[in-house]
Length: 237
Image (tube, rainbow, N blue to C red; front, side, top):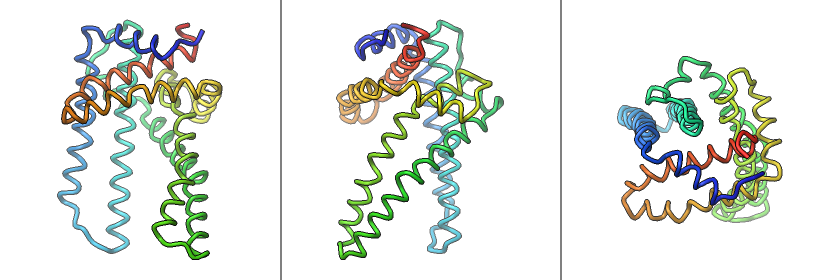
């Protein structure tokens, strides 16, 4: 039986009851590490217009993005342990740095490749065609965003569970995880989007709180998504 969004949130609150400190600390530490590295790089980065400087900047941002993917894998591990009543600690955030981090990194790169091929290239072609036919550059930009947006959102959604499968199944290959995510998300996309959009209101309130509210809302959302994963894989039904 598939649980409603209301039930998934209830389970998440029950799991986090009096245990908010660990996922909150993991979220803060994750953000602190990536933000500090980004700040230090941009502080030392000598802005230039050469192709080399642009390539270095893009490469650095990619490396930080992939580092974040490995840390996020640690966050998922923490949330899964909490949901299952298992013992967990803050150092679990770094668990994948010593346990096949390449799986999480390659999965992110593979998803980026899919988005590039199925969304960015078609959108670029549509924008270029618009310019060729006489459209203004800003209109071409809107066309690019319109064409790229829908397939990008679809791909990120249908493969949302890839990291969960990789974290939860140490022997699972990357392609197998993509296939598992695709198969489990079929028929559940509407429920998934409803769950994601249900947090928009409290995210708006977080902005009004100068971002402080994210310390509670993000762990809550991550735990709800973990409940969604456990339900859709029929671990809990």
